[in-house]
Image (tube, rainbow, N blue to C red; front, side, top):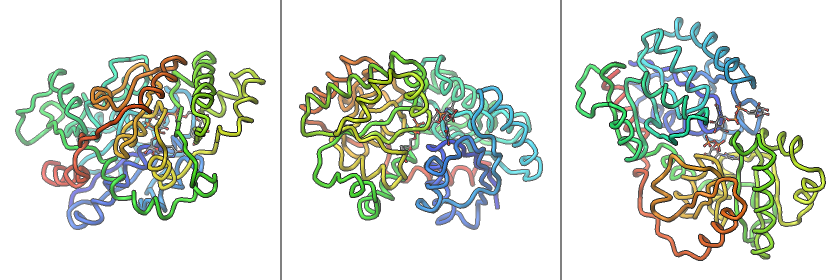
Length: 381
Ligand code: UD1
Ligand code: UDP
């Protein structure tokens, strides 16, 4: 039996972990033991615990309880607390997802303890190191032993950075193995889509059954931490509502964005947004609820990495509120446009995408990425 410690902390990692935990439970129960460590980076009920029951994720064995803090402090607290756990658990490997501070802390701690790192969502690049996530993912990739890229582009980035596709076992941080294996987030969308349509509560609660709507989420520091960017995005929303008089915008609001809207937006402007009858601002929703919203909306407007892809999985166009994206293939296909926090580009992006007939050929695998990851862990760690 191999033992793996999985690190989760931020909302998207909790969601991603459901796919691996499901594969471990259903197909590798006698070969792979998973010990789950929650760093506590996200801690509100609707940013963390709501996902465990709904997605059948095992309760974490440990919660480091770090909460919110500056990047240095948050990462340092995680490293200090995780080191003790890894010393006790002596796992065969440590699995990290994506690019958050929890990912970075896991990678640094394990590498110093000579524990092989499995990086799920390896190789993605924005080529913008002012993003904390870009720093986290580059460091993590270069410390990892098994690297799983969800996309061809990610796999090619790794090759361009010197990772050889020809290494042979035993793999190590100096002779790592790279894979292009599809996206575990697609595994989850396929697994939960039907149940989301049956069991969601958000559509009825917000009387969206017969409404046309766009779905939006915003949480990137580059948008939330600048009054000009936040203002431009919401001005764009008001114009979109004028241009599409039978549409609403549904905005499940990340706590970071709520805080910054209250601190940074002009009071009257904020009131206008809040009072607009077709601007539906709600707290963050559960996974089944967001899947239902994604499936019923006409288009997504987001700076979230996860939602850009879930738009594609649900065959919906997407306006990306960032200056670039790691998910370049959806832009190349013409299913998404990059608008940054530029009012004219956001408004124009919605107009153009609403008129286009789009196709969504498979780009992210077939829903079996998590099983593939587990197979490789069992084989090579
Ligand atoms: C983090 C990740 C980001 C990921 C996002 C997913 C890093 C550097 N950033 O960004 O890559 O896309 O999670 O959502 O790791 N807060 C709460 N309650 C919570 C969590 C956060 O109120 O449960 C508020 C706090 O004011 C906190 C702020 O949100 O300071 C930011 O949280 P943090 O985890 O630092 O960054 P995110 O923006 O959530
Ligand atoms: N998500 C959710 N409820 C919400 C908003 C997002 O369950 O109110 C899910 C979303 O479907 C996706 C994940 O959270 O699976 C994405 O997380 P987030 O946008 O916070 O981070 P990112 O993907 O940008 O790192």
